[in-house]
Amino acid sequence: MRTPLWRQFWQDLSLSSVSAGVVAVLVGFSSSAVLIFQAAEAAGTTPTQASSWLWALGLGMGITSVGLSLQHRLPLVTAWSTPGAAVLIVSLSGFSLAEAIGAFILTGALITLAGFTGQAEKLTQKLSPALASAMLAGVLFPFGLNAASSLTEAPVLAGTMAIVYFLARLWIPRYAVLLVALVGLMLALALNQVADNAWAWSWTKPVLQWPEFTWQAAFSLTLPLFIVTMASQNLPGIATLTAAGYHSPTSSVLKWTGLTTLGLAPFGAFALNLAAITAAICMTSDAHPDPKKRYTAAVSAGVTYAILGLLAASVIGLFRALPGAYIMTLAGLALLPTIANSLVIALQDGQEREASLVTFLVTVANVTLFGIGGAFWGLVFGYLVRDRRYLALLIQRLTWRQKKH
Image 1 (spheres, rainbow, N blue to C red):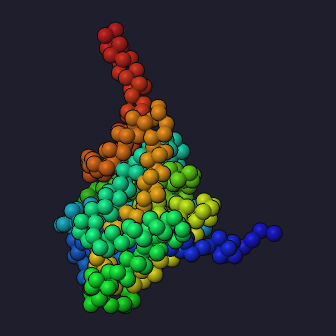
Image 2 (tube, one colour; image 1 turned 90 degrees about the vertical axis):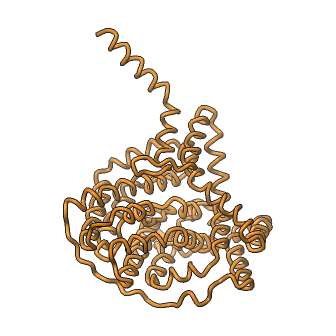
Image 3 (cartoon, rainbow, N blue to C red; image 1 turned 135 degrees about the vertical axis):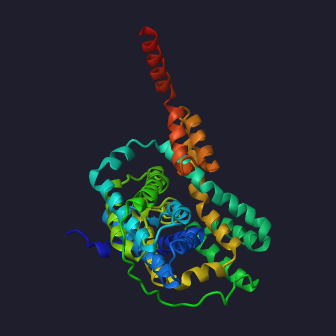
C-alpha cells in the first residue's frame, strides 16, 4: 500500500530542510523585495495596493513552490521575476495602473502557453551540465564576494558569523546555517544594529485592480517582461536543477507559474518563475543528506513565502530593520557549498573547461545586451565557444559556396 502524500512528507521532513527553506526565503525577500515596491510606485499604486502586490507574489510563490515540489518530489522553489521588476520600474512611466495589470495578465497567458506547447521542455533537455554549473557559479559568485566584503563593513558581526559557520560545519553541518542565523541575529541585537522601531506586524488586505488591455502596453510591458522572465529567470532556474543532478519538469513549471500569475495578476502578481539562487540553498546536503528528500526544503520555503505574503505590509519593515551585513553574510555562507560544487562540475571536463570559464566570466560580469542579463548571455557565449568548430565549418561552407558562384 502506497504511503499517503501528507504522511510521506512528514516522514521526509527534517529541521535542516525547514531551516534551508526559511533561509532561502530570507535571502529572496531581502535581496529584491524593495524592487517590488519601486515597481508598484512606478505604476502609481497607493500603499495599500503596493502591499497587495507583495501579498499576491508571496502567495503565488507559496502555491507554486508547494504544489510543484509535492507533485514532482523535487526541490522546486519559485520566485518573482526580479529583472521583470527592474523592467517595470523603467517602463511603467506613461502607463496607467489598469494598463499595467492588463499587461501582467497577458504575461501570465504567454508563460502558460509556453508550458502547454512543450517546446521549452525540449530545449532544456539539451542543456550541458558543465555550462549550467558554470552559469550557476557565476550567478552565485557575487553573494560569496558580498559575504567577504561585509567583513570590512561589520567585522565583529560578519566575522563571528563566519567563525560559527565553519566550526559548525565540523560538528553539525546540517544545522550550520540555522545556527549562524540565530547567533548573528542575537549579536546584531546585542550590538544595537537592529532598528526595533522600524516595523510592526499587521495582516495585508488584497486589493483587486481592474485591467485595461492596450497594444501599447502589450508591446512595451508584456513582451519585455515575458522575455526577461524566461531568459534571465527560468533559464537559470532550470540550469540550477540540472547542475544539482535533477531533471527539470519545465513544462509543468511553466504551467504552474503561468496559471498562478494569470489568477493573481489582478492583485499585482506581474510574473512568477523558477528560482535559481534561493532554490540552490534548498538543493545542498545541508538541506537534507538524501537528495530525494530535499523537496521538503522547497515546500518549507513555499509555506514561509505564503506566510510572509499574508504579512507583506510589515515584511519590508522587518527586512529594513536588519543590518545589511547580516543579510549579505548569511546569504554568502548559505551558498558557499553550492558555489564550490558548481565550480568543480564546471571545470572537471577538459573538453568543456574553456567554454565553462567563458560562461562563468560573462555571467559574473553580468553582460547585459538588449535588456537581457548575464546569465542568459553566459550560456550563449559558452555554447558558441564549445561548438565553435561547427560554426567554423559552417562559415567555411558558406565561403566556399560564395566563391563557387
